[in-house]
Length: 543
Ligand SMILES: Cc1cc2nc3c(=O)[nH]c(=O)nc-3n(C[C@H](O)[C@H](O)[C@H](O)COP(=O)(O)OP(=O)(O)OC[C@H]3O[C@@H](n4cnc5c(N)ncnc54)[C@H](O)[C@@H]3O)c2cc1C
Ligand code: SF4
Image (cartoon, rainbow, N blue to C red):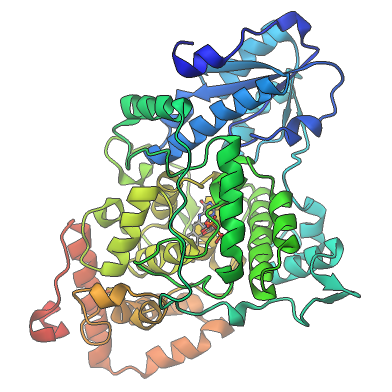
């Protein structure tokens, strides 16, 4: 291995190693080795596979952050006295492990979080060349999920959340929740008007490993979306400590402004830790303990811990349903590859699509201007950072795709490729189950759809938009048109009863205008064109 990283890696004395452990790309923590409790000197196998990197149009920042963290982790392992075999190649993980096990004997590992990796290495496990142990990173065993939620839909977070709080005793006193209630959600929905000041996005040390990885990404993956800039991402152990400190500084205001969006501060008081925690550079338990030990207000601590439990919840749902394959829900096939140039992939597998939504993902999701400021600002953030916080993901990016009847699998593929923290077990439940209504009521009671009133209340996007949020913005008409089109799918859904009553009361002329607005926005964006406000502010000019 040439280059700064190769020069820092020591040759491996294979004979001195008594047990070999393979750690996958998202198991970058020494706790994974400690949990195996293997006797003698442990050697660690880490694999950098271009096969995986080429599988999707991953954002360049995502590839950079993953590779640099893995390389830094390799050096940390070496410094801690482990022999590290670092394999770089074009083969799949299974192919590399197959040849290594022939030379080294049986290799230990940890159950993969990602379904697609589990499937890939399953044959090696079956014939005993790979011995897989329990994953030490989850906060909750599957039994807690099964006991509180069951194995059949509908799955509900509330029951699981209470179970976790009661069993762990987190924020509990004498069997009751501290503060008298389990959720402080109602206190966590404030817009942000500039006060208190939000911190700038953190900047991290940029070392020779980062620089080398950036060059690698630009050279081999320059045709992928986005750009790589590892000054903006934690990669070394020192950076990880800095990222954790940043998150704890944000925590006091996290809860109150959790749902707010602003063009003055993309991240507001969000921790930006999902990438690190999904890679296990920070163990989830450490985060929860740090939050509970802080003196941040209860609404922030509870809000933060709830998000970490939500993370567990989506993981269990994904695993229990084999990535939703065991669910009885309407399905469809569709294009894969997120419609990024050159990544169209054949796939005949039908994916959940409760509302039979079949429109392609508009180019606006890859940076073409849509003219809708809320969408364009959120996409800018994704293209720049591979990241937005939760509410732009849910209430802008998913909401608009949902209102436009974009195929939910295509939207999921886009999130999977474009976000630095996306892995199948977390992105699929969040997009198919929450961001869209592709799973019906299996995960959420109703779809998260909203018009311009929500976006105007929770963000400053409307202030700089060419549309007037009340007079010319198409969002609210898209909302009504969505309810009208999909009404039959919501029959008997009590959570949708008021919305359905309201849509039924709309005059026929208004309904026709809603449908015409949908058609105009849909066709304009699908043609890759920018929307313009209707002439003289009259939406009828669109019909
Ligand atoms: C449509 C959609 C797609 C999403 N895709 C992903 C994804 O690919 N990867 C991912 O990690 N999260 C995903 N999320 C969840 C959430 O939006 C991100 O975890 C969060 O925005 C990351 O920013 P943060 O680290 O600042 O999180 P914070 O807002 O600071 O939250 C703290 C931590 O809680 C966890 N968390 C919060 N919400 C969720 C959630 N819904 N599911 C799982 N963990 C959660 C994360 O680990 C996060 O770091 C998605 C949400 C939606 C609505
Ligand atoms: S006016 Fe409408 S399109 Fe513009 S930012 Fe507000 S909600 Fe989005």
